Amino acid sequence: MSSVKTYIIIAAVVAIIAIAAAAILLTNNGGGNEKEDDTSVDSYSSSPVLWIRGNSDGDKDIDADDVRVINAVIKAGGKAGAYPWCDANNDGVIDGKDASAVQSMIDGKATTLYYKNIDGEIRSFTVRDGVNIVAVNKCQAEDVLIVINKDPKSKIVGGDQQVRKYNNEVALNFGTDPSKGEVLVTGTSNGEVQAEVVSTLIKTYGHVEICLGSAGSYGKNLENDFGKNPDVSIVRLPSWEEGTLSGVMTYGYLFGGVQKNSCWQQAEKYYDWYMSYYEPIVKEVAKIADKDKPKILTVYVENCYPGATNKVLSKTSGDYERSIECGGNNVGDYFGTGYVAFTPEDMAACQKTRGLDMIIVEPSGIYGEGGEQAVKDAVQLGIDQVKGYVNENTAIYSLSFMVTAGPGCPASFVFFAKTFYPDNAVFKNFDTDKAFQEYLSLIGWADRSDVSKICSYGPGYPAGSS
Ligand SMILES: [Ca+2]
Ligand SMILES: [Ca+2]
Ligand SMILES: [Ca+2]
View: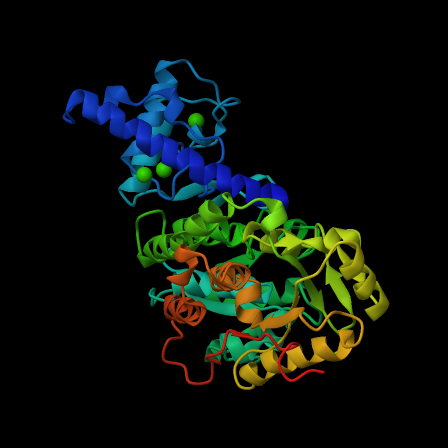
């Protein structure tokens, strides 16, 4: 996880440097027609935020800047091994065909796009006039809903067991008959995609685009079953936390044939929204010394959702790094790595040894109606677990699962930043509930009355305890 986060920061910094460099060159020449020759290989980025080959400058879009970078690399004799993102047609050499390929993307005429997936593999994507999505994992469903929500030709036609479980949120019409427009469930367990369901969907819709995470966890047999089927695109992209940004961006540009329809515009809107919070937060956090950061833990607690037990989300769990990024001194590494079981005694020992100012209880499965109560209940369950063991000045909060994982995560970044640093002048201008509402608008749910308006609740422990 941390490497993904580091990459986003690097990508953002590289993009800023690239823009600054371009601005200087423009100034020196007074703008004008020389721009093409001014772009140098230094404008190339090896860590694009949009994972489509041809996005050579690493920024959020594919445009004339990328053509210029490719031409500069050609001029300098650059090889595909050193400049893989310039190899837009994925044939192993960088030449005029790559500049043409990017130009065809800009013109909305590209038929095949190459992108890097979450497993680090380069895959091709066939551009379609509208996509028929199979969404595997609720975060993937949210990602694709953001990019397709303004495109009348695109829809979700299948979802895995988890998407169905959280259907309160995504509000799909699950059933057994795709000819009636019903959405099929793809298997009996989370992440499972049965071949016969995919075959049924192909028969109904002609082609399907299956959106999911890494091959190790989701739809494990898909490449074996459908890897060579031209009617199936298996698109494996990140879909939660910081990786969400690249996932949404890349989906938007693939589904939108780069410039063809509203999908890529939705992706760019998402980028701008994400960065409007993420960039200032990271910038402010960089000014704060570790010793001045609040000591925090993110945890699951017993009965938070069916089957939930006490677990610290410690180093490498994903959530650990997220709270660090937003300025928390996460002491989860006291417990080890990953999702680690804890007892109230462990929690007391952690507070004594490392310090503990704040506990964030992760709720789960709290979409639609009852969401607000679930967030409040999570705080109470947290109190029940640590009362008498942890100092009563330890603030306990909870957040809606709609913002702790998946593309709504900038709302949780805002919550973390504001809660960790209530006196920070920049963070004072942010509003967690407003950020959540902005997310609901982006995904097309602004008018839904069944989506809980509440995003966060707390602190629960100091008030009403003793
Ligand atoms: Ca650009
Ligand atoms: Ca670009
Ligand atoms: Ca090439």
